[in-house]
Amino acid sequence: MSLRFFLDHCVPMEVARRLQTAGHEVNVLRNVLPMRSPDSVVLAKARELKSVLVSINGDFSDIVTYQPARYGGIIALQLHNHPEILPKLLDRLMDFIESHPDPSEYDGKLFLVEVHRIRIRS
Image 1 (cartoon, one colour):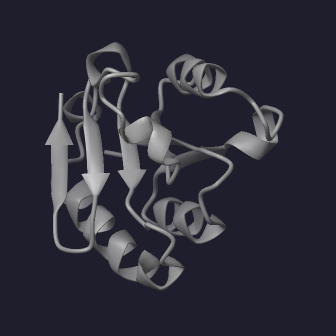
Image 2 (cartoon, rainbow, N blue to C red):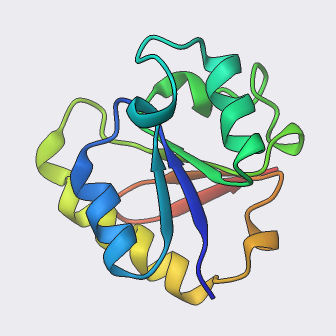
Image 3 (tube, rainbow, N blue to C red):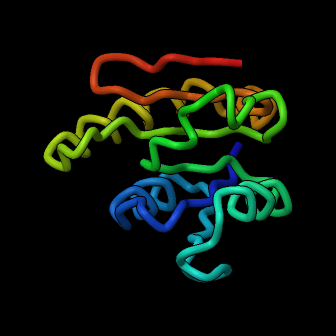
């Protein structure tokens, strides 16, 4: 079963390539919205596309401002200004996605992807 993802403008294209190679549908913000779109517009577009939002924007990790239950899933890659860890983060994410292929498992949840773990908030 494939999943749908909507990648924020800050997400490296390597993430899109890995997701697409695994057979998932990927939409990239820069192809459908202006690059400087407000977070609320980005989240609305992800919902419209019935996609899980993928971002490295730390704002989306704030569960007070962006309550996970209100969205169709948010994956926050925790790079913390260390792009060299992206391959390990992607390995962790891809392993998780492979073992959780049902789109309903992402709805209303925030996934904080770190090198050694994925924390899930709802």
